Image (cartoon, rainbow, N blue to C red; front, side):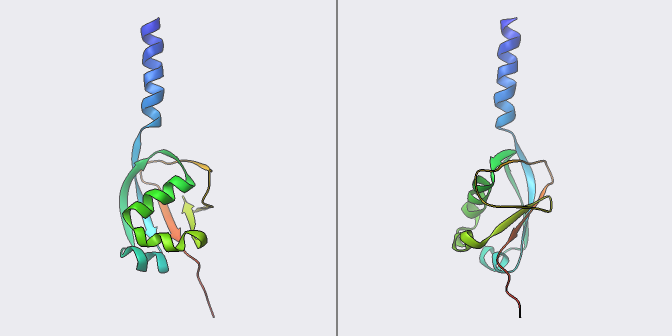
Length: 103
């Protein structure tokens, strides 16, 4: 019985550390700063929206300049940077949407 409990506990820990491949889409200024329009990366399946942003900025440090103005969209739903916990799935699309000005 103890072995089973230990295995279940290990499975819970393993699930928290799972990574998945997601597609990042960069628009307008974020595409200019990153130098790419899209890419596929591996990131943890569970992380906060701020941690997600930090993962993106690790790959493209110049994006840090728009941090206070950027919005992310995960599966086409807006996400504000903060402590909101995200549950990502393989193949999810994440859009990096900077402020857009128009005339």
